[in-house]
Length: 299
Image (cartoon, rainbow, N blue to C red; front, side, top):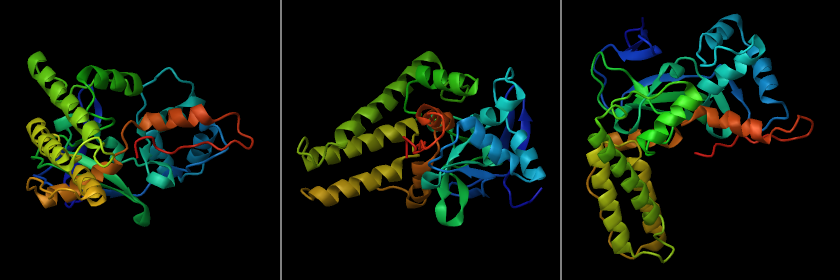
């Protein structure tokens, strides 16, 4: 194993494969850089089944082996349906370049809210996906990312992973005792509500002073929950809206710039891989001359 790679892929009892840290990983550390096996373009005239089958058939033998080593959760499918099922389970958003398959990154399992510790983003100019740690990860800990908007309540998060991926999330947040889980859900809902109100700044609905008060409150709630993955996006939003309004002195609590800079990669986390294939299926109308939109609803 390459000593520079700070993790190993192992079998996890009852959970398939996952990534385990082989040493302490510092916050902000680059974990992985990976080029795609293939990309599905943003528009296509082919059906989902056809385009994935054709792309897989065009792979080299070693790349095809890597593709078919990836998981899917429906074991009743006939062989022709398996490539699409693998794609549905493992595809990652590559921004305007479409949706891709990244076999190594696909070994990152899911965690919610404060449980996940890694984020990934597509770098168009490099034609690569990069993965960074957003928290310190100790040796022996599992590396986790997120497959969905983890500000949803636990009930909704678990329903989503069960329906889309065939598992009920057992991360550290989803397995909290009932009272602590309810408190976590309340904080996440509070963050959603505060952000919704904050985004009205500039429309005349709230003043600059109120907006900064909301920003401070969001920061405090996020710190309490341990939900740091969107902090820099939040800072950018504050600065953008302030630059448009500029009605009150801007003050934001001091923050760790190194952590924040790398947490900005969360802007491109490909939450809910399967949603992209559902969009493709929804817009496809038989092929001939029909443009299929694969634009991410979350990007």
